[in-house]
Image (cartoon, rainbow, N blue to C red; front, side, top):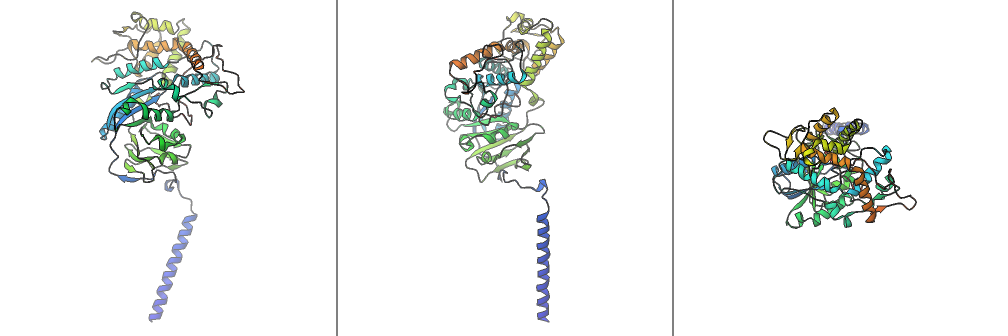
Length: 456
C-alpha cells in the first residue's frame, strides 16, 4: 500500500508540473498588451524619501522674439516650486539666443514663404530683446535682485559660436551664420558665469518646458553636461511626451528624479517611468544630477506665445497698410507724447490693475485705437505683458525689422561668422542687401536644441 501511495503522489506531481509547463508555454505565445510591456529604455528607479537639496542658479534660455510675461513666469514659477521643495534659488538668469540664430531662422522663413520686399518683418535684436525682458520683469513684480537678463551668447560669442553642418547647412546651403549650441552654452555658463563661480556650492538648474525633453536625447555626452547641472522641467496641462530617439544615454546621466506631476513620457510605445509622483533614484546612473518635473504654469500662462504675438502684429499691420498706416505711423499714433519711443516692456502697475491701451501713463498718452485690427492687436499684446507706451517697442521692431536683419548679416560677415559651402553661391537677401525679414523661433538642431520654450 505504501508503494502504491508513493506512486500515486509522484504521478500527481508529474501531472501538475506538466499542466503548469503547458500553461506557461501558452502564455508565452500570447501577445503582451502595451500596458504590460516593460521598456528596456525605462529610467531605472527605486523610491526614496527625497532628492539632494540644491543651491540653484536657474538658467532660462530661448529665442524670445519678442519676449513676453510667460518667459518671466517660467523662471519665477520654477523658483517658487523649487523653494517649496526645500531648495535654495539664488538667481534666475534669462539668456536670449544670439542674433545669428534668429538671422538663420529669418533666412529659412524667406525661403519657405518667398517673402515679398514689402512683407512685414518682425525681428528684435539682442539689445531690444534684453531691454524688453527687463521691462517685463519689472512689470511682474519679481523679487529684487533675483532676476537677471544677460547678453551672454553675444558677450562670449568668440568662444561659443560653432558651425552646424548637420542642421543649418542642409537648410541654408547658400550660407548661414554660426550659432551657439545649447549644450555649449550650458557647459560654458556653468563654468564661467559669475553667478556660479562666485558662489561656492551653487549648482546650475536648466529650466525647460517638458515638451523640450525629447530633443535632449540628441545632446552629445550628457554625462559631462549634467556633471555641473540639474534639469528642471515645467509640465504642461494634458501633456504627452514622445521620444523619437533612444533616451537611454540621457537617462543614464540622471541620478535623482522628483516628479510633482505625473506625465506620460514614452519611447516606441513604452512608458519611461515618469507617470507616478514621488522621489526616485536611478541606481544605474553615472553621475549625481537631478531631474525635477514641476507642475504646469498657472492659468492660461502656458498659452502665451511669441509666435502668436508676431502673427497678430503682422496681420494688424497688413490690415492697417490698406488704410495707409505703416509701423512708424502706428507708433506715432500710440504714443505721441512719448516721442514714439519706448525703452522696454511693461510699466509699473497700479493698485487699480494693469493699464489699458486707451489709458495713459508716465511714458506717454496712448490714444484709443480707431481701427478694429489695432484694437484686437493691442488686446493680445496686453495679455502677453505689453500695455501703455510699452507697445511701441513691439511696433518699433516691425518698423526696423528689415534694417536689423541686414545689419546682423553684415556684422556677422565682418566677424567671419558666415559659413558657405564650397559649391554654393553666397547668400543674397530678397532685397539684394544680404539680409531678410521674418520671425524667429526654435529649431530641432541635434546639437543646439532644445532652445525654444513653448512659452516663446
